[in-house]
Amino acid sequence: MRKTFTRKTTTRRLLTGIVAGPLAIGLLAACSGTGADAGADASGDNVTLSFANSYGLDHPHNRCGTDIVADAVADAGITIETFPSSQLGADAARFTSIMSGDIDIDLQGSSGIAATYPAIGVMDMAYVFNDVDHLFNWFDSPAADVVKTGFEESTGAHLLDVWYFGNRTFSANVPIRTPDDLEGLRMRFPDSPVHLGNAAAMGADPVAVAFEEVYLALQQGIVDGQENPISTIDQMSFNEVQEYVSLSEHSVGSQLVVMSGDAWAELSADQQDALESAVHDARATDLACATELEQTVLDKWKTAGTPEVIEDVDRDAFIEKAETYFTANLEGDELDIYKSIRAAAE
Image 1 (cartoon, rainbow, N blue to C red):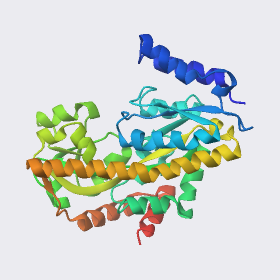
Image 2: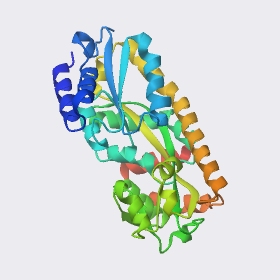
Image 3: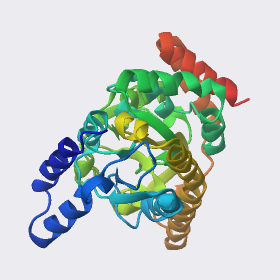
């Protein structure tokens, strides 16, 4: 059986610095469960699983993702308790808790997990996927088995599925239609090897700025532009300090649904099937909500006339430049995975 006492104690510690008063008591009670029902059981008894992420309850990953999963697995004796908005820690801390078994399920970007299992970072590389269908088709194919197996062997965690996060695209005070348009621009990229590699692959001059400081950096001209999904640009109001959004769509953003290996092993076979099916089926509802939100934002911008949306981006030129860079600079498992993904595009 899982060491449920250890998991509960650690979760209480994670929550201590985040909430206080009645809210803390409510969250702790929800996380702790009651008696034997608080932990997963291979016999198929009722089980309560924590599902953590860094998004608000109104985000597609929750209202069209975790909520859908929770409803779908209830009949299998699984109760999902969602902890949104980084309540159980930032991404890196939560993944550590997944590996230790203190959190049951979480959403993680592949570039973040790459700090533990580098090969999975290929999934976040610029133009490795042409579009979201390419992402899903490759992930569901035997070609992705090497990544799934390698991930589990390296981390001890179980990889349930992949959800769509949004295509990363450029914003700046000048249009960006070709790689040459990046010349001389100071573009903010996340400070991770994968994202900084993307900058090099596309010919950008990267400036590492903390996500919380991007708006101010754009406003003060510390950086000339940045790259994020459409919904993120709108949510963080980057459009207020950027004149153009150029639809480069250079990275098909994804979120991996990862699970503690101990928690997975302690589910019954029927519960494993129910959970895996529910997470996979929620992929479609999550995608529909995410794309609807993106289109709503784009329509709002076009109606307002600001920022100006640049649609005639020469993606073929960007793809060729990025592919030349990665095939020359990747090696080993990362190169093999990159080639398998690009081959799946055809």
